Image (cartoon, rainbow, N blue to C red):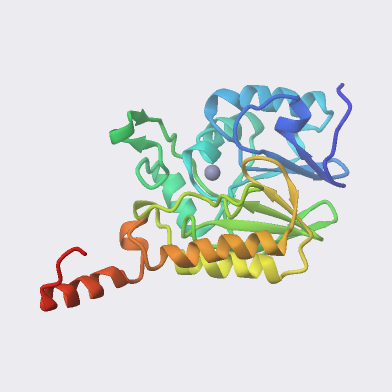
Length: 260
Ligand SMILES: [Zn+2]
């Protein structure tokens, strides 16, 4: 048996618990003997994670469900294997469920041919579909389900008291989940999701990558300004809502304006 190192009451993060980086953050939320996992990471770390949970003295048969923040390969490739070992269910947003059940490799970033990325996505059945306003129970704890689209259209976050298990919304350095049209990213939705997080009573963000951090309104505002800029620049292609330079260009063509 290993000593449990919760990062907050009822929450263990398994990279921190293991003392080394295995992959995406995997949160174990527990109350008494009941527990659930938030995300799982790649398939090749599943056995280490399950061994760790056993060593922490959580009964494997008391895993309530495996919960997905979204369907990206680095969060969810291991669900099929973990589900088989733990004999539990999978819980996800309906659109993430579709990607997980069909083993979609494009929208989950498993297949990026131009970068030589060719990962597998073992299909997994999702028993429970959850969305905005739903509540998940672990022992006597209640997790509130937030739909926070932006990075992905199926991105979820989960509120536990003053904590937000925040998925790929925002990281400690002000980075956000990748913006990619093929991935279902939507910048106006992203802005609304981050404004909601900023304006909430949440005090701590527990993201799916990198360190957990205290919510910082000034930092989120800087990130929002950056994202609002993207709406009018070419940086993320069709994710922009307009491109003012093209209006200017049209005018300059009409005037025959040459470089000064
Ligand atoms: Zn991610």
